[in-house]
Image 1 (cartoon, helix red, strand yellow):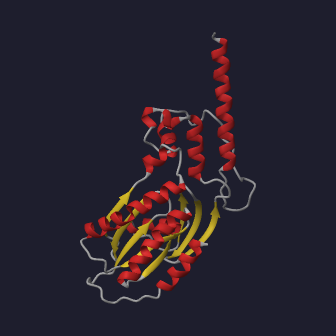
Image 2 (cartoon, rainbow, N blue to C red; image 1 turned 60 degrees about the horizontal axis):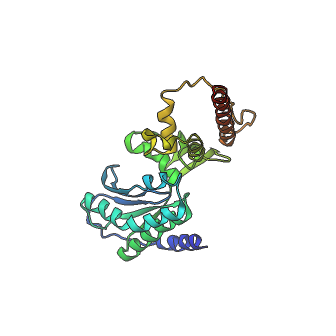
Image 3 (cartoon, rainbow, N blue to C red; image 1 turned 120 degrees about the horizontal axis):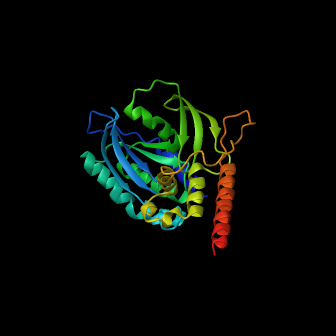
Length: 266
């Protein structure tokens, strides 16, 4: 497969060595294209972000009710060059840094765009190339802003994943629990679509999860009794499929009550 071929080539490029740095500091250019946003940033060894660039596709995908993979690929291809150039320009450096790029997990086509571009830059500039597991990167993000000693326990809850990990070092991660079926973001998007929240003017520019959070501020959290999932399983895994089914059933039941009430009022 194309992605597997890219990874093999990628690994061979990791052997590139480059010692002619123009800076006394160690710098890394990070490139991220795992889903729908195209991002790049230059970070130094002191955890300082020197410059960054980003192109968001959020509004485009909101209009389609979720991320459409081939559309995401198109906009990555269209914007990755300018995003990386913006990050380098804002950091006021030349391309004399290491490059770190997301290689997994994520949308296959989106990942390929970032990997290909990073490989081309590394090869043409003869600079090191570093593969990054973006969930592990999420786990280490807290270390950019706080002095957190290893080991620490980390809950990673995002649109596409929900994982409980033990982080014992920069390259030492132990997966304790994972989402078994639907991801949190997938479930929230599905419920938001079922509730037609994005048809509300106040929620039009929000993701499904954000729209639910916004509307929940005016709701009663005790109005419905939500069943606990996987309570009889002796592990740390997560399941959101049961919650999705419960939410769908509850919505349909409440709509039926409204229908009967309106019909009775004729």
